[in-house]
Image (cartoon, rainbow, N blue to C red; front, side, top):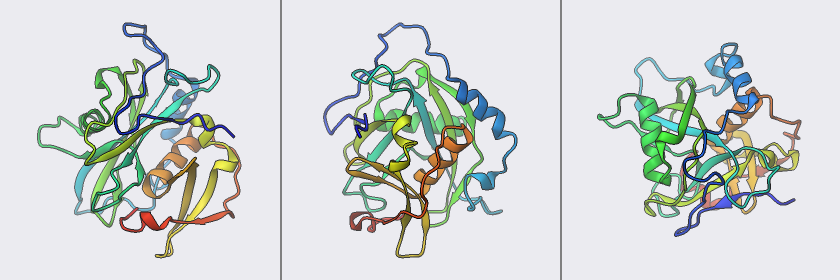
Amino acid sequence: MVSGIAHAGPSGSIDPSTPPGSAPVPRPAWLGELTERLETVTPQWFSRFLPPDEGGRESAVLILFGPPPAGAQEDEGEHVVLIERSHTMRTQPAQIAFPGGARDPEDADLVATALREAEEETGLDPAGVDVVAQLPSLFLPPSRFVVAPVLGWWARPSALAVRDPAEVHDVLSVPVSHLVQPSTRFSVTHPSGYVGPGFDLDDLFLWGFTAGLLSSVLELGGLSRPWDAGVHRPVPEHHLGGRA
């Protein structure tokens, strides 16, 4: 199966299929249905780890869906933006993640944090992002981050590229059609006893917080297809130097 995943690489870029100055690309219908269903689910839908009463380190990630980039097949459908973290980072080396990071004092809110971090990591133009919703904040116990997922639609796409190689190894544009293929899905097992959803991204392995959140969003959007959760794959050795 051809995945259709686009990579910026260490020094390249992923270019938009729409020329500068084009009219905004309208949201797909499933995003509207997703926002309606958000009102019917509890935060536990996305994770069993919710922020403790004492809070934690505020941060945000950008879950950005958009039209396919230049060079994609015309019928490929929507893509989502992901990053591959630097292989030399002290925590979570080489892991696939959403763009995002800690809130700065200058950030007006957590939406601003998500957009700023995405710009710093991938070079995208925040002005082209149509913010759809801010999902319930979730907790990452190992780092004590309280993470606000910000759901966005890329109405005016711009080029993507690695901005800081010390933090980002690659930027990916991944077709939703690939993510929902049953053959792409599996359950991840970790030596700690953790079991959660995973995605096969060609030679890359998506697991942990990002995979769980992405799986929940795809299901809430009505895009998921039945897959065999009984297929288990262990976390690759090179991911065990960091945390999910």
